Length: 348
Image (cartoon, rainbow, N blue to C red; front, top):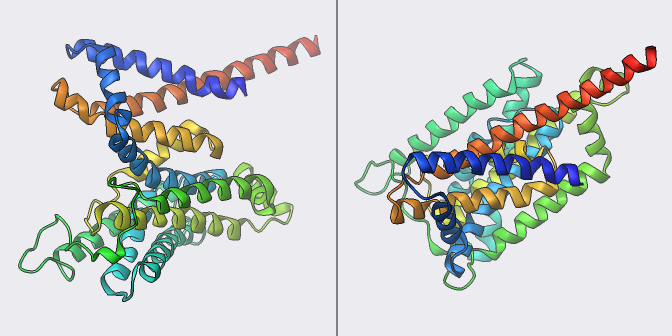
């Protein structure tokens, strides 16, 4: 456990050190800047609610990515799966009759199905077409983005306006209930907790979790042992895409209340960074996703108070993941050197 904590704290210290140097070069006091990020994320109840609101779709997409990564699949197409889920949820929001008790579950289910469909298509390309999931996922992401743009400026455009700013806001019956006067929804929080606990249980306590690990470690050996490797890959894509699609549905019902072409907003790619830093461990996904959400929300204060571009938050996130990858590589090399030394001593 100490080693696992160090695998996060050491890269964090390195990332903060590099960020401090960048701030000094930019002429800004590092401690004040980092303090402003913390204040922007947790300074009052409204900001805390905004941070948790940003945490929900990011954590949901990251939970789905853990499943695909465990199967050895680089599901980079998660951004497109979020958009596909948002499109499906928007279709229900536009057309389904009834009150919140009927419409909200339907649109969230549609989001799951839309994302799962997009994940399944990536699985077909991977299994049947022998297309690497990275290239297939990126291609499908472009298709989803383009289709969302077509809907927004075409069939679903606002009356008299052809703009990529989004559709007309959906009726309030499709909006998630919020806590007090904030944008935070208890529905989204509950679903995120269920998703994280469910994925953790599935990966650690079920036969399917063992199959995922076997296929991810060595697909050829898994087939020899009777594991249905192709079916396992399909299910991994369905799980990952479904949770990403649910994130898209939550963005529609809980944050945007309409469809915009860039509704994913880079959350899919950010979820990849979260899972890389968590090293495929569900227990670490929640706190790391919350940390990333806090940086994203809190960095807006840098522009307001220090006249620094808020994109510095993305720099911190990127440097953190880079430091984590380098630290993991250094650890692996050190273990390998120790094993080689022990083997050499044993042969002498």
